Amino acid sequence: MKTILIIEDNLADQFLGKAIFNSKRPDVTVHIASDGQEALELLNEGNISPDLILLDINMPRMNGHEFLKEYSEDNKREIPVVVMLTSSDQEQDKEQSFAYKCVKEYLQKPIKFETIERLEQVVAKSYG
Amino acid sequence: MTFEKKLHIRYVIALLLIALVLSFTYFFMIFQIKHNENDGYIINISGMQRMLSQRIALLAYEVNMSDTTDEAEGYIQNMRKALSTMTDNHRELTQDASKDTRDEAIRRFYYVEPNINNQIIEYINISTAFLNKYEALGLEAVRNSDEVKSIANIAQSDLLNHLNSAVSLYQQENKASIEQFKVMERNFYILGLALLLLEIIFIFYPMVKNIVINTRKLKTANNELTEFSYRISHDLRAPIVSSLGLVDVTKMFIEQDNKDEAYEALDHMKLALVRLEELIDDVINLTKMKSVMIEKQDVDVSNMIDHALEKLSFMVNVKEIDISTQIEGIEKLHIKPLFLKQSIENILSNAIKYYDPKKSNPNIRIRVYKENNYCKISIKDNGIGFPKDYYDKVFGMFKRFHPDVSFGSGLGLYLVKQNMEELGGEILFIPHDVGTEFILSVPIR
Image (spheres, rainbow over the protein chains, first blue to last red):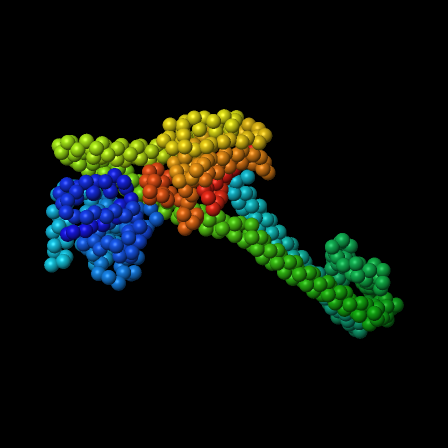
């Protein structure tokens, strides 16, 4: 796990994600996109190729579900591992997320120090 | 008048009309049946008169031809009975012909031309004279008498034809009356159908329309409520969850003696909590608006705007923005003040929140003017504006359009729209190439 992309509109959660990764895994590069739209632009420009995407659901402009739909339809390259990180505990959100193969895990906010280990396991398992 | 009351009145009128038509049809039918019964009876006895006139003549002839008084006596008895019946029948027929309800032609036939009343009376009188003569002077006195000849003459003359014609006249009148009844029945049928059609137009159709509209409203309200509960559970949780995470990293930064990062974490925590407070306030306002009865008061719009600006003067950006107010001769409004106050504050705070720091002269122009009996409050800014794709969603619940300026409950404009509807006015969103304009429109009295 070298590069990750956090797609999150909330400034506090962006800060939290960065702070936790910086302290536990300073070698990992953390990119931030404020919503699905910005994430699509970043990914399609080809400047970044993350091993893992941490994806929120409730965001303005383009939410998590819309991002997954657009991205899986649009992208011809290999889709990275996606882990949902959201404050929604709705079954409907969970089901809708797991409809996409790239989604490997559904985690509840907030991101904690222990979350990093869980994410590493998911990434390791997915890339063999 | 409310829709329900209007419908209620229309229903009562429709039912009364239907009851009226039904009653009228019923009584008309009863009348017609009685009329027909009477006609049948009259036709019957007028036919009997025809037969009796010939029978009396025949019996007078038999008496004349009898050899003995014993032989004649039987005929005399029968002639008496026939004459009595004919006299009774004639009384009934003349009484009936004198009625107003009888056709004029029948009355004329009886009393004017050919005046069969006279002819029958004459026939009855001669027959009576014949019987009286027989009674007083015996068989030989009446044999070949003038009376016998007269009876035979009258019976064979026009009387028979006239009695025939009378029967036909009664039959014709009855037929005409039945035709008239048919026409009336058809008219009642058409009237009934017309009433049903009116009921469809004025009761059934508006009712169905009302049900469709209300169902649609209920569906929208239900969708809003579902969305509301979903978003509220998310938006209430999100800042708390963030803050919990931030507490852990703040601790870590303090342990690392990294003051700057610790402060930043605390700032984020504060922002999250402020956002939570805003959301709670808006939700409270939304429920308050729907439940509390507020009295109407005289409101000075100019004062209200001044107070709103004063209240918002604590906002961080406010000193960067040039705010001007222009009031063009508007009288006092008589409205529920809370609704307008909340709306003005909300639009103004948006204009301040979403100002464009890149502009050399960020400004907000407030203009109050009168148009078509409406007080218009235009609030125009040259801020960052709305993205074009979101124009139709501006007044939706939980809409936030600016990811870079990530605060606000997303309920504000929805609340303003509800407020303005409560005041009988509206809010208009006027997109501009640069910035945004909202016009609040409130009816003057």
